Length: 292
Ligand SMILES: Nc1ncnc2c1ncn2[C@@H]1O[C@H](COP(=O)(O)OP(=O)(O)OP(=O)(O)O)[C@@H](O)[C@H]1O
Image 1: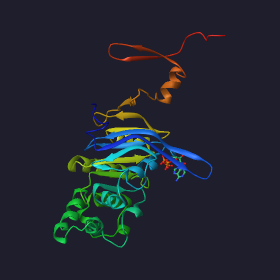
Image 2: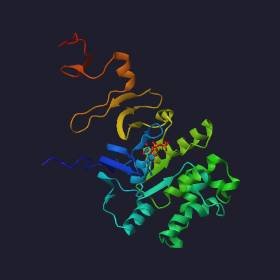
Image 3: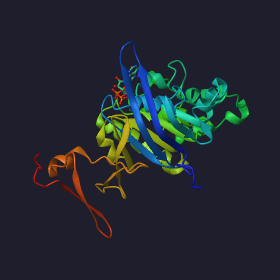
């Protein structure tokens, strides 16, 4: 028997399909999307507007159910959760950082109180909670901002408090939806540095969803999503490395060749393949058109 697809991964999306049915149109937002994320990874999922990012995040965050396919995070089968389990999953297994700074934090609580709130919600006793907010705020370089309210913090500081809040209950994975979308480039880079630091020092898996392809320089692995499917990946080996581009090949052997490569070599409809000992050659079809 072959092992189940993604058996060792923390996050598994297997042929995910999500169809939105409106009055007279049907929109296939996810069209058989496959994605594996291992424990401890920092991954960016990048795609243009309408590519299906929010839909994917909706499924992974337990807010939405796919039409078909399989989605698992840790031991949770996201298609088979009861409403109570869904709540537990959202409160303990995953943490969220949203684009809108105001959505992440309660304005009338201080930074430390905001970080403590998710623990209080799941019933962690006061004694056990003590210390955790300061520990997290300190890790994010915000120890001296602990007693300020969000309005008294810069946008970048608010997002770093939001990261601390997302980490309060020691989630297995943090989902960040355009976490730097409202920030200028320099402040955004600081927030990315904080995310990388959390990923490295605490080992928390982080999945960032964004339309900003420039994020590829901030993370090791970038997965592109196009038309509701994951298409290509860029993996960087070291900081400063421009990165190698990979195409994803699905289980029946389908692969999407990036549009820029297709244009550059005039690849369309049919291509010629040649198997070499260590690679596959792909050429434009140069045969004379066969005429009837
Ligand atoms: N509730 C809905 N009803 C009908 N169609 C929807 C719904 N939500 C999304 N869609 C459609 O599904 C497709 C994917 O949308 P989605 O919001 O997931 O993309 P996205 O990549 O997150 O885009 P953006 O970056 O603009 O938020 C789009 O064609 C969108 O119009």
